[in-house]
View 1 (cartoon, one colour):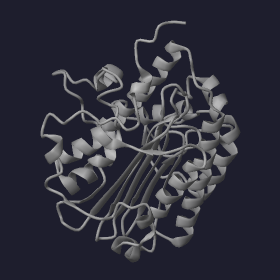
View 2 (cartoon, rainbow, N blue to C red):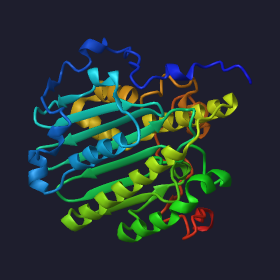
View 3 (cartoon, rainbow, N blue to C red):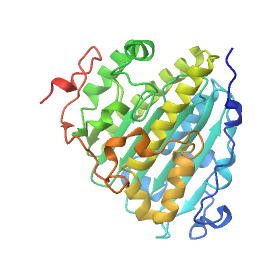
Length: 344
């Protein structure tokens, strides 16, 4: 067998990310006030934001951890040392972070934000180890007192590990039997509006992208979708075989790094974090926690992966879309085939 140039098991789930070049790690969160909100049991205690809205994302995280523990032994990550429970610069908004790993999960992490104004955010993801070509499970939720903006793409926040538009074999392997599940929730949680063409590379046929005014009934549907999608992903994890071909492992590693690189640069949630904690600290949370591995799993840069975003001076163009096309309606048909190219 080909010699492996990369020690994959050195990508331990509890590996400490690189220190920020901006500040020593010991002081990176010095502007925050640490809180006592980090116990798993404490997730079920309603906060002011939850009491005001009547809705809670804490039970999503609690369910995810308990359900995942039924399938694999979760071990706390050393990321927890520096990314746990913090208060934002307004002294009121709480940020709560959890991180774990296992023999087949590189990183399971969650970020919950609860504001005194009724704002709630949940960013939850499970990144598999590169020895498995599993898609990435990722769910993003944003709630204000007026509107919920929900992005739930199970098996990857924006993309399966390998492009399902060009890789029919990958789509058949992981998504064909899940199309009915996607159709069920596509009807209950309708398409939420425009999505750029560039983002299509990072979506699967069963993505849920929706917006709705807060309501108990819709929140119940959303929670059911989260339960069903996570259970489906965990079943795929149980069935997955560890890859032994080094070239395929390297391909999986690069695909995950490409995804992390896109999210670390273009994720729309960055603006919320910057407002809460400032530019420097938001960057640290984004690169070292939310998209941990972007600085460690590969050496390619954003413009290496996405050269269309390279400006004349070599910097990254900040436009959301370089093509300029977006999709107002769901660009997949009922069989999971991509029909976006025929939508005008």
